[in-house]
Image (tube, rainbow, N blue to C red; front, side, top):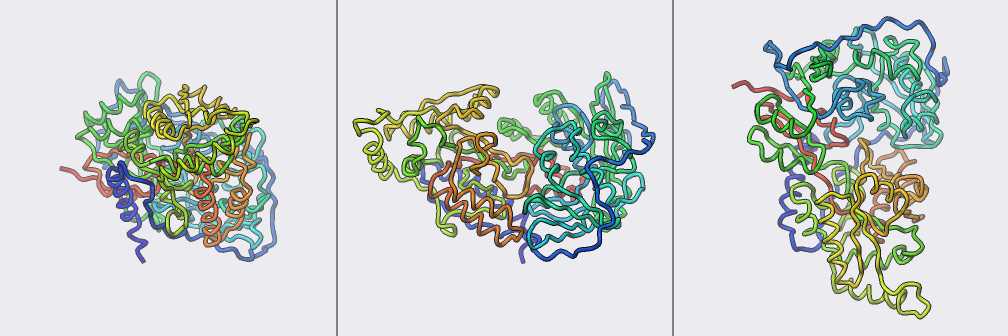
Amino acid sequence: MFREYRWQMAALVVTALIFFAVLLTGTGDDGRTEPPQPSPTATAQNTPQPTPTEVVVAQPTVAATPQVVTPQPQPEAEIAPRADDVPTYREALVGEVGRLNPLFASLNPVDADITELIFEGLTTVDQFGDIAPLLAEEWAVSSDGYNYVFSLRRDVLWQDGQPFSVDDVLYTFSLLQSPDFPVVDELREFWKTVEMERIDDHTIRFRLAQPLAIFPAVLRVGILPEHALRGTQADQIAAHPFNLSPIGTGPYQLEALRAVDGIIRAVDLRVAPNHRARPDGADGYAVERVTFRLYDTFDDVLDALRDGEVDGYAGRQRDERRPLQSLQSVEIHQTLSNDIGFLIFNWANDELFFLRDDRFRIALSYGLNRAPLIDRALYDQAVRADSPIPRLSWAYSYGESLGASWRYLPDRASDEMAAARERYIEPEDSPISEFAFDLLTPDDPALVALAGEIAAQWEVLDVIVRVVAEDEADYIERLQAGDFGAALVELSKAGNADPDVYAFWHEGQHPDGKNYGGVDSLTISEALESARRDPVGTHRRIHYDNFQREFINRAVAIPLYAPLFTYAVAPHIVDVQIGFIGAPPDRFVTIQDWRIETP
């Protein structure tokens, strides 16, 4: 019954976490938190079997390409404020505009932020992290999990006035299915395995190669207008004028591109009238214009915030948080990001065979006091993480309710490590004379300090840890090659709101995936497989509980920290609510409620 207050409760949780992170300095890891309730998920049912009228193949239909007029960037000596009284929110971005096309948004954070307001997917994520319908009205999943039937909304118009239909959905995903689509990533590879079937103008069936409960979350990708791109093939879309003249169904539409010396320095969006005509768009949107001003560096952004040139900026890096907090001209909104920093072990290195031993890893976990580590190295940049699933996810569980928690027990750690020496070092034929391994870390001052403190705590246990800091390229190369004993790794779900972490911990994701440590636990893999297949939310919750319990009790890896997402906004921009952040563009989920106060 408290659902309408969940974002406020989430904000209180995050604030409390930061406060208690300070209080916990020097204490152990026996804190407990109650898990949030599971997200409502589409219930498995027998899907109605309407007669198909058309089966869609991968290639877009070839037809005459309509003329598309691309607005030319307006040249200006400098980007000045708009000379009108339209309520405008001005946000700073670092970088350049590439393509305002949701199929390319993953390549450029600037494009991702702007297209978030122009385009919509069949589904979206709300401020609680729940997947909800957007361009879809509803969906049903077959009892075997292979078939999803989506009913589309009938009250949606494109920003040029044309009606939205199933043709737009078919066209968008057929581009991703094409072998000629220029972006090779996991999304394209996935869509190559999906069959699409048109049932009628507002109903589509997707048939999956295997059951996948996260499929509704995959459908967040923005839908393109088939009528505006008719005849455009997958290998032509990257160079199409549409990419600087986008037409979407979202709450804002392109008003102008403004350039200095031929480089786009500002993008103006206005509230889209056709979106306002929809029932879900009739109220709110007091921010009638959003202007994105583009800067070369973060230092330029700080100057712009100080001088009042812009009203807001979303921090992308941990080290941006403190400079933003020091500004008097903004208020800081914060929540937990969807990323987690881990200490992973190399299970696949035969020379470090002892790292595969649960008892050895558990002894290391008993000897690691994480709370003061995180507070000293990442003070006010992150909070302690306890689970391999993000804390704001509906699937998160930890402590007494789970039956598993991290504990700092130095005496027990010493006893367990003594037993490990008897097993592995004292035998005459032992190939090792000491417990020693490298701890790989990015050459980031905060993470190097964190790695150093971990090494110091384990030195007490007579475990020799050599901290190896590498630049980004060498770090990634060593991580992917398995050239480490342990490593600090920040695992990102890249905008996926679903709690699925199959890619990081399933045994099949090594050596060619993101299971960098080569974890090969059958129990872990089976739990993740079951959670992926089962579309029923309550069932998935059980599978994820089993996964988290096994992960913690065996110290598969050690969660260390969850970075804070920082959004700096001027005080006159009010009613800004930041809840679940799967990716930075999710900060706009509640923009409909924002207001601008005038002095």
